[in-house]
Image 1 (cartoon, rainbow, N blue to C red):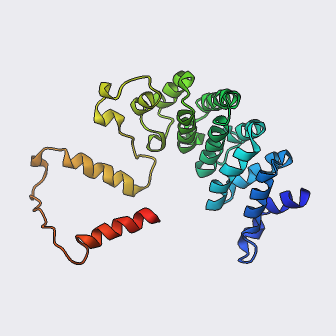
Image 2 (image 1 turned 180 degrees about the vertical axis):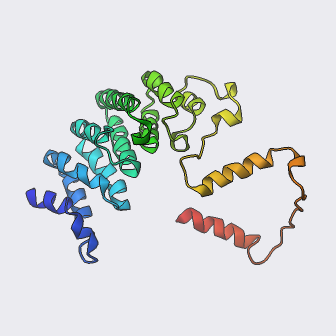
Image 3 (image 1 turned 60 degrees about the horizontal axis):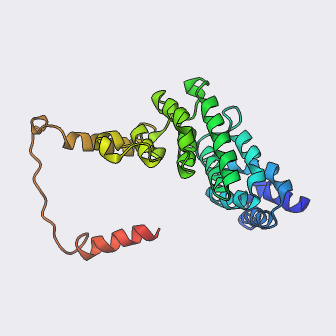
Amino acid sequence: MKTLVAIATNEALTDDGDTWFAPIHAWRALGQMRAKAAIEPLISTFNWDMDWAWEELLDVYTLLGAEALPALAKALKPTQAGGGESSISLAESMSRIGKLSETARTEAIALLVEILGDRQTYDRKANDRKANGGIVFALLELKAVEAEKVLEEAHAGDRVDTSHCGSWAAVQVSLGLRDRSEFTAEELKPLYKDQPLFFRSLQEQERLQRAPETLFTVPQPKREKRAGFGGGAAQKKGKQSKKKR
């Protein structure tokens, strides 16, 4: 067991082309063994700069079960979490465990609500909006209607990356608190201000398309769709290829 844990937590192995996969196999083995002794040590691997970690550890901690919830919650606290993808994976691990049983769900929701509430008291600069978005999404996955108050506070305080979990209007609809017909399409739409420039530029393009025609000094002609290279079947094939990736 100790050897497996040592391999599973040795990030240096991922730098070697011959051994990079060793920690991954160790994670899987520990999960299948329901190795409770691995719960605490494996937490550190969420901060590895490795896509495999963020994906594989979700399954590993689901196998480890509800006993892992306190350790995951501790790592997700604003004073501990590394932020970004690691925090999102921590929160998602908790939501997956919460789906295992009603008891686990109750515990997971209580911990996530406490963490999200604590995050509202921290300085905005130190508060990771992306991580908060991950916590909100985890609560939505658990259908946590009992978390309505803290969810509203987080959105009202502009502490949430809505591109990850949706606007406050979308959250209410997702939880069944309000009907979609009560909101406009704009209210249900997430904001991309925490995302790369590419997404923000897309949002600006959409805004301009809805603006009066007088904003445009030069009318934009419509391009004819032509078959052949880049069109018709080729475009359809390209879209299918992207879906497979």
